[in-house]
Image 1 (cartoon, rainbow, N blue to C red):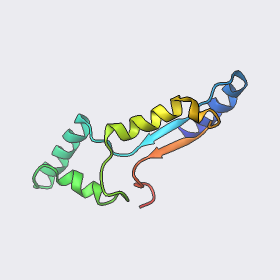
Image 2 (image 1 turned 60 degrees about the vertical axis):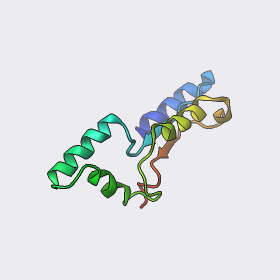
Image 3 (image 1 turned 180 degrees about the horizontal axis):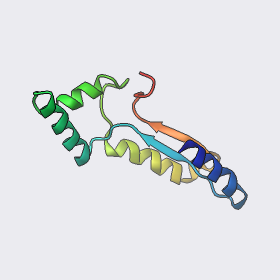
Image 4 (image 1 turned 180 degrees about the vertical axis):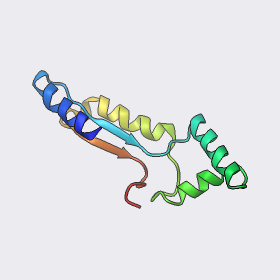
Length: 98
């Protein structure tokens, strides 16, 4: 994904188009609720077990909300990011480095 983002950024820069990517971590969505249910069930634990287990591995100690990711996307789509291109922004609460 990074390579594709950087290549597209390079190719589209002459047209004044910036290209960036966002890399979300675990986002609390209906899909995650189903994953949590399956993890919890497989572990013989109550609902929420999977969420708590994964949240412990995230530096900020919680899963992201959809608004966390939406804020990043809104920034990248807006004028304040007009000098940012070819970047992959992690929106994962520090999950990658924890």
